[in-house]
Length: 383
Image 1 (tube, rainbow, N blue to C red):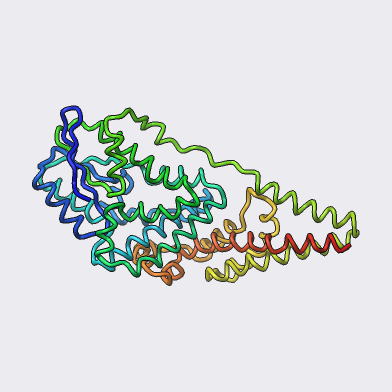
Image 2 (image 1 turned 120 degrees about the vertical axis):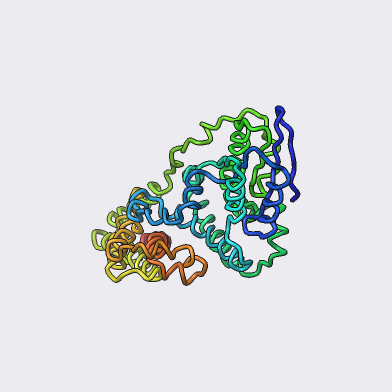
């Protein structure tokens, strides 16, 4: 997508759309700074991502136990999956993800040009997205993100250049948005508005904005309009749902009906089947994640209770156990970005393995519940 200059309120704003992992994008950014001679270079980065770019070691300060306790393990895992896709494509093409942003900052600073950060905080964006998703939509997002990792293998540099019409984020979101429209709304549309609003606040006469190509049309349409940045910075409460409580109620009613119809013996049989199913599949989930034997045991023991209590999750207990037994080292944080470039690396790195324990244990418990439900129903109908 070619660069475009927009005149608004006696200011010139040059939008440069990039593919994020394209050498052509890096060259285009360098040429734009040299020819346009802006007063400020605005980049699609928030303060957090900018700090990490300037100080990669900041990642080492992540508290994985805190992540699990705050119920953000799945959120972090999805973020790493998306980063994995970008890094694998970048490795294939011999360029680091976000290199055009790094070049924009370095060239601007070298020329004495100010740098403006116009993107919304990545944590705010992720939390707004996650809190608005239903359970089904979260599962879909996880699945599509996993698929995107495998898709990186077949991309050529020519494919990446063609993606500049949308950029990689937009292309990846298209399939996800079909099943979870809120993802596109929050990650793409809201950020279009946010970045347009931030650009509108800049006072410099000549502004060069380096953005993902997928944001070009959205930002162009919203430049010069009134945008409530404070509203876009808010993190709404989690989407409330009663599905978990309804499911738990159904299970308890089935067992109670079994007791009333067939006596305590039948009720105990149904409880045993329920417990065995959730325990078995939770343990399998933790085992697939290569969890410690004690982690697998914890996953199995807590699963029957957590399966009928929506406020609890077997994966949290298993993940905290794994983190306690195999506390991540500084070196694990240092190698995580290279480890996530391969599927094997997700299991090899202790940090991502802990996240896998959380996610796969929860999925195992859910699967065990779904398997047990029709079995309990058949037992009830037979008597």
